[in-house]
Length: 104
Ligand code: SF4
Ligand code: F3S
Image 1 (tube, rainbow, N blue to C red):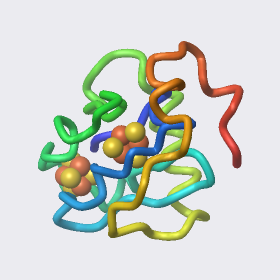
Image 2 (tube, rainbow, N blue to C red; image 1 turned 180 degrees about the vertical axis):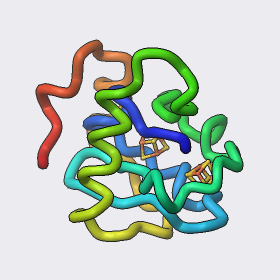
Image 3 (cartoon, rainbow, N blue to C red; image 1 turned 180 degrees about the horizontal axis):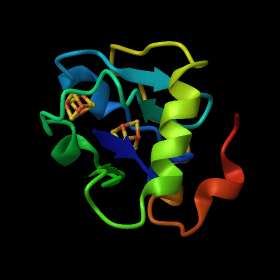
Image 4 (cartoon, rainbow, N blue to C red; image 1 turned 90 degrees about the horizontal axis):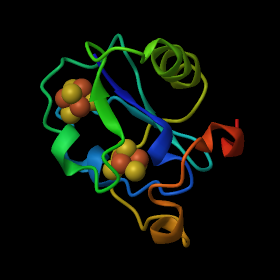
């Protein structure tokens, strides 16, 4: 599966959702997640993210993010259409350790 990681938080560009063939993105207030059981590993979303927040779970060190994606995908609503990024997306792009700002 692919996972959404740190740099999506407070940016939420949503370019990723419009390309997913199985519509497996779920939306929180300031972060999106991928449902790990629904993702078919096609990889087309990865290059679409302007914040480079989407990664394959084969990359090392992503256990925490995989768990977060799985957990929130169960409770957040599905999102299938692109929308405007969060207002301060540009300012937040690249800020380190954004997990502390995640709105559950
Ligand atoms: Fe959707 Fe493919 Fe990205 Fe998985 S890898 S979330 S199936 S676009
Ligand atoms: Fe987030 Fe990137 Fe999608 S910032 S909403 S993972 S395009």
